[in-house]
Image (cartoon, rainbow, N blue to C red):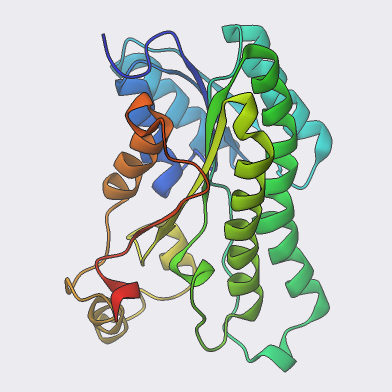
Amino acid sequence: MTRFDDSTAIVTGGGSGIGERTARTLANDGANVVVADIDRENGESVAATISEETDAEATFVAVDVTDDGDVAEMVETATEKYGGLDVAVNNAGIGSTLVPTAEVSERDWQQVIDVNLTGVWRCLRAEIDAMAEEGGGAIVNTASILGRVGTEGAPAYTASKHGVVGLTKVAALDYASDDIRVNAVCPGYVETPMLEEAGLYEDEATVEQLRELHPQGRLGEPREIADAIAWLCSDEASFATGEAMAIDGGYLSR
């Protein structure tokens, strides 16, 4: 027996980075996984790899978390194909351009909030309804160290991740009596495609600056975040809800 035998999980943003590793970790521990991502090519590849390399099943669903219909289809796929929903990881998110607060365009602000915060709420709404019908479940939302502190030039991203932390706490309170646990993780800087897309790998000096922000002197690995997410979703964390867990190499301790 493994931790998630006979369980069904959804992972948004499951096509790359932390989401990909989380989907694989849950599958390795026995869960059937709905890999949800806006990137069809990457998402289908992850689902195929899980099905080939583990005893679990995986299904890809193309999902834009700003679209109610996509989110509903994602949850329906889990419940209809695998018989219910036990675990959900709301990991889909985008970065933002680095500009001072007064210089952020309304379009850029709204896009980041729509995906990173409203998208999590939209997924929570559908997932909680499905879990309540089955008698409970566990949800983890991906926030960030910037859900706990600020940094110059990232007002929309920081606001969205602070919102995820607050939303997590309220949802945990609202559904504790339904045996639905809701937690968040707050990763430090992790070696993922998002960092590369943000241009933070352009030169070694920039990467070294990012490493030095963490007392451990390095960036995180997706595996380290995925392992924490899996623990929070498991019965080993049965008394944990409303937590925003930092996995950050000591970043927030300074």
